[in-house]
Length: 178
Image (cartoon, rainbow, N blue to C red; front, side, top):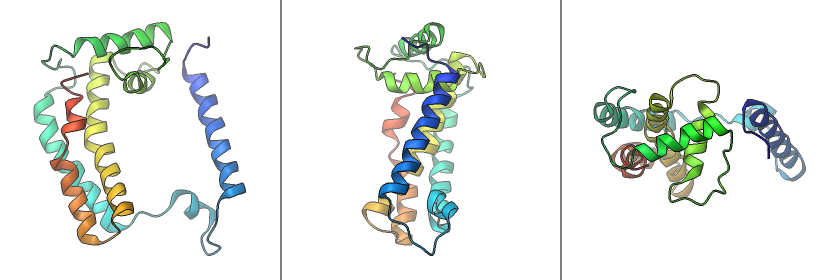
């Protein structure tokens, strides 16, 4: 097989963007009043940005004291295997998610891919990636989901920002289990 690295990542990313842009051109419906950059990137609503910031700040206030320093090992019997899995991915270049294991390989492959350029060791890189997932990606996803599922009301949007920090059991569980 092909050893995973920065070049295959770049090729797959460019191919995916190309297919997405082609699909948008062939099948997408466009608002003629919007420019191409606005259609592609959108413009965040101020209330959505405020709700996300609320969620990020509250989540960080909860998570950072619990995690301590980035190079500290989480005190959990399940924390060694994921770190070893990420190190194995980096050493072998085999990031296949087809390997049947108990742990979610996609999460480990995502972290290992972010560590490919050698920006950090496995332990601090994993801790930082987990904090980013729990304190940034989770609030953004919660606010986006609520705005699309329930509606763009300002009250609902702010409630989603607060709720994303209040219900962080899933992402913060990653710091103690896998």
